[in-house]
Length: 212
Length: 360
Image (cartoon, chains in turn purple, cyan):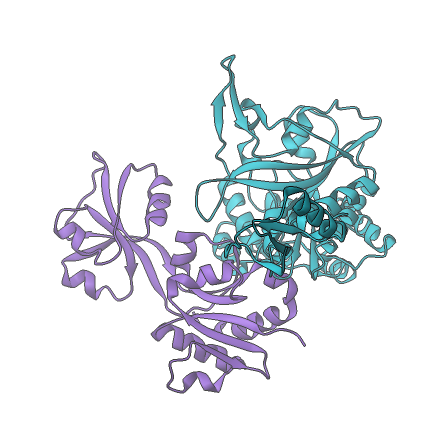
């Protein structure tokens, strides 16, 4: 018998929406909706096994082969650069990676720009592509507070609705790139389960293709 | 008598690889651990990681601990076009490990053929690669590509080197939506579509060839297909399973060209074998010879090659105070003669586990 397709889903609201998409694509697993503390759910008939992990860990599970496929945000893929295939844009969890600064801030390019962010690599790549000298201040949360306290000039972060920024008197200065959830696959798994992963990819693409 | 326990899975496997290479006429090549740094300085992109351990030799020369073997083999080759040199190696190389970010000693086994390399030689390399994977004893897959198709399509689509590189990266990630986004408004629609279609060609060679002909091939591309088909036919000749063609498989176009391949073994999440034709590296190093070769990453196979042993040794030989050295020696030899491993001690150790205990 062919082995189960292991799927790593990101815990949380987005993960549940993504599971719904998998279910609509024909890869449902009813027991997942029952209240329980279990972390692993199987559908023997379809040969799929789901498990919930921290969103930023999905790419690690997939790269290391503990999961054959998974769903991770483009932000995570750009920041950690896991060696995986990026098979589809699921067009969910849409947001933007952007540069934000206190209202009225002007970067005249005369000093090293201090950038606070969780996404050091993305920030470095963005500014180095335009030859701007920056000082990256890596923070793990509450990035918005950095410019208010004078820790940084600007921040590079994910912007969904912009409410948090507005409430802290910050505004988007520049958009770096749009972000959405991507279906990723382990490279070796793809080789051994080509048909299964291909069928799943196509079924998900059929559902998301129409969406903009 | 030989004791099977004495060899690790890795050692047994490297031994098998060596005899495989020898059976195809590849000569074992032994080299020094050091190399002048200048050899790597100009070819950083060829290396898997761009960090090299360096030190200054007694004569002031900047030296490096080998991060790669191929470059050294090419450097020492006499560039004779009339014939081929077939060499194999089992060497430790020093590279930055992705996980820890620090240097690691990695065991690498490989085979290289340099000189008048023809399609038959490329096929022989593919055959050896396939057999090397089979030696692991696990289910394996060999993925074969010809770099010409996608490279040509990208070069025809745009002159912008940065865009070319970005598109190639998306091709390698099977990221069709990414190619779409990159090309929008910057590349002719037809040209973008062609890259996407070529990058999606995969399957057995028969299926792949049919898909390629549907996309439409010009004279040059027909040649690529012929090269690919004839290299793959060597596998059939050797009675081996068909390999999977996947044109999205990429390798650095500054070094590699033509047929390239990667090997996977079930149970290992990354590729364990990688190789192909590297005529471009040869040209870069001022050689006229052509070359093909591959390396097996033995360290990546460690987990599937090693079995956790239940016991350290067969017999724990516990001797009392009255037993003379001669008596103990005689008993030890008696057990060893039966092919058993013996751990002799006066007081049993709880750190050593033996299958049975003999007291004298």
